[in-house]
Length: 504
Image (cartoon, rainbow, N blue to C red):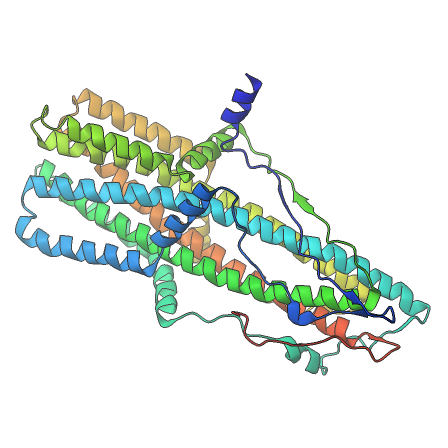
């Protein structure tokens, strides 16, 4: 019984994450002297999951963020727009296209949730790996300092501003994005800007304003439902694409950092003869309350794509009962209602996850910076000048406030209560066409808003992490140049094959 309860509690549990940096080996010659080859530096690789199903699902999620899928979605939306010129006045067209868009958005919801979970696990593992190697750096550098005081080593001159040779020796440029990547990154800042959010709500209020002129008809609701659903599908595809591309960019940056860091380790092991394994670093599980735990539980449920499986069953049942309902407009709306309500809840959960999980990762990388400062203090060398994000503008401050409110766990609870209210309202209307539209239009509007806010949050986190990784790289580069400046009494040198291409 306890085993069953433990299994049921497993989803949603953010357990400990442990990692150890691969140990850079040194060889011992016949004369007992140590040698190391820093051309064998170890770069960053994404952790491979044990289960084949997980690996397969991750490939599906990765493909969903590809340019191919993005352009297919754009083509589909354009085809819908042009066909709507001829068929757009028919209720069946409006309802059918809204159903399709709701289902596509539902599927992307699940992909984005899994994508968020993967980014959390990969980010935490990368931070733990850096912390693991930092422990070895500190141990070996302390030994070097002790040995230098007993004249076992001649300590080189600490890196001065005019000594650029060693810094430039291993420096590589961070990867550059393609023209398409630069364009979509720029577009993401436009779509995620507070002005865009304001224009979105201005359009919604204009639509509400003309409702009286249209007699608050079902057609009036269907037009907005179709438009907001199309916008939502576009944002989902766009967000999946920029997140996959930005994740790939971050991985290349981490690769440059890890290679430089392993070169520092190889050099220090050569100087000290230290062959102790890099320690395993265990990052403790975050402490969360009951509400947040429930949100994570639901996210794990969606992230395993079980939700898509349930949607498939719902679609089969929906098709089966079609003849009983004479394929009426009510029948057409059922699947859109289900996907819309669940998708709205997923939007609330996604925004919460982006903020909470991202903060856990940022906190661990902040610990890396603290340990770096400690290491530089031990060596009595200055830290490289830290690049920072400029002072936020009033618009950015407002965006941050909106992000903070929208990602709070109580906002997720408010979303669930809103869904319950919509279901109660539709039930009071006996799930008529108008009642079902009540469960379609507001969720579509709210979820579209949350997707725009999600882009805003992603942009802020991405800008911060890019600068953070660049600062880490500069600190690693200076550590390497410092280690290279330490000369043993002999003229031994490392076997060096530096590379200028971090993509190889």
